[in-house]
Image 1 (spheres, rainbow, N blue to C red):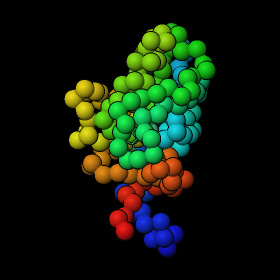
Image 2: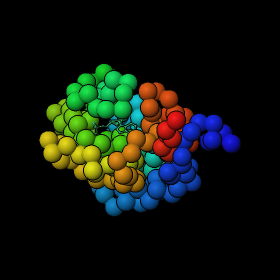
Image 3: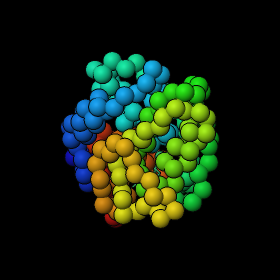
Image 4: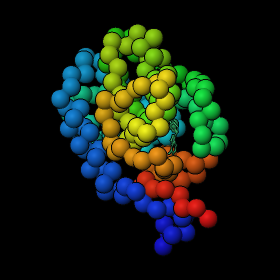
Length: 182
Ligand code: IMP
Ligand code: MG
C-alpha cells in the first residue's frame, strides 16, 4: 500500500539489488586493486549503493579507504544542464592509489567522464568505475564512456529510489522504480 501512495512502480526490488551488489563484488574479486585502494562515491546519488557495496566488499579483505566527492550536473529538473561542477572534492590523497569511482547512474556520460578525469588529474595510479544503473541509449557522442562494473542496464526512463532522486525526493526508497504519471 505504501508503494501505491508514492506512485512508484518497482523496477528492481531491494532483494534484486542486493543480489546484483553481491555479483558486482564477485566481479571485483578478479581485479587487482593495488596496495592503496580508495573507493570514491559521487554524491549524492551513490550513498546507498556505496554503503551496500562496502559491506559486501568486506569479504574480499581489501580494506578500502572510503571517500566522497560531490558533483552537480542537475539543477532540480530531470534534464542534465550540460555542465558538471565540483562542489566538494575528495579529502583522501589519491596519488598512486587504485581508485574505484562509484556512481548511481550513467546517463549522458558527462558526470562520470568528469569524475574519472578529475581523479586521474589528482595522480591516481589506476581508476575503475562502477555504476548501479546504465542507460546506454542516453549516452552523448561527446562522452562515449562505459563503466567497468554495471548493476543493471535500464531503458530511457527516469528512475528513482535507492539513492536516486527526482527533485530530491524518493532517495530513501530501498528499491528502484519509475514515478507514475498523474
Ligand atoms: P550524466 O552526467 O548525464 O551521465 O548524469 C548522471 C547523473 O544524472 C547521475 O549521477 C544522476 O544524478 C542523474 N540522473 C540521470 N538519470 C537519472 C534518473 O533516471 N534518475 C535520477 N537521476 C538521474
Ligand atoms: Mg548523481
